[in-house]
Amino acid sequence: MTSATNSEPAWGNQFRLVAAEKWKAKSAAMGQPVTDALVEYAQPRQGMRVLDLASGTGEPAISLAARVGAEGHVTALDISAELLEVAAQRADTRGLTNFATQQADAHSLPFPADSFDLATSRFGVMFFRDPVAALRELRRVLRPGARACFLAWGLFEQPYWQTMMGVVHRHVGGPLLAPGGADPFRFSQAGSLSGVLRAAGFNDIAEEARTLPWTWPGPVEEVWEQAQAVAVPFRPLLERVPAEQWPRIHAEVHAAVRKYSDGQQVAFGATVVLASGKK
Image 1 (cartoon, rainbow, N blue to C red):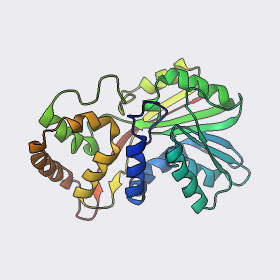
Image 2 (image 1 turned 180 degrees about the horizontal axis):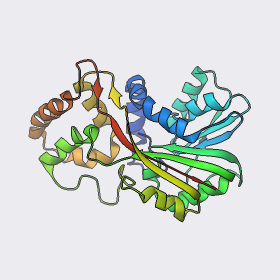
Image 3 (image 1 turned 120 degrees about the vertical axis):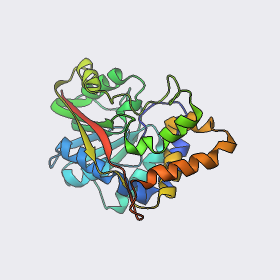
Image 4 (image 1 turned 90 degrees about the horizontal axis):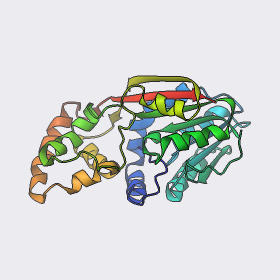
């Protein structure tokens, strides 16, 4: 998942960078169906100027750049310069010349009004410090009639989360997430993301839930290791685990995840929220 623009250092630039490098190929494979779903939902067209918020290491910005053609342009924006360096390298490897990165906070965008034909964010809007203010700022830089399209996590009660963080939580109790901290499930309730779009001034608002492929191309032990590295909002939960409980937790997580594995890959599925609005 990519963080948005919460400027607190604890929201994981270092963790995200390390995890992005170690797991980049397999994480990209797992996330590709979700990326593809958002790109199709956004309906990019040749020649569009696109802004991707909380772009992290580059998706869906890179996929969008491939769709808008040489006459179009995509700007990948994130608070982390380090992650954007990874995004720029990936775009360069793909030979994309219509792609640029911009380090900035979504609450204060460094662009003139009416600059973009389309905006996207994949797994980012949940982490904006003030979502209404950030989306109002996004609306400012969109051209009249332009769409803003978002993809966020659905409920915690789905296999990917329940088989791993759910097992840990049953063992240690306490808050699932730090009070007042980053919440991946902030917009999991139907209509909640639509409400933010409406409050920010968007019109023609649409929202839907979908279950998409979310498959780790490797063994159960590996996806659990990856999940611990990338799920930064759950770090306080993981840090509460007493050392003597870890062997039992690892065993229970492996058993739970194995129910979704065929020995070669782990097919969880992911329930997500797609929402959009027009300026």
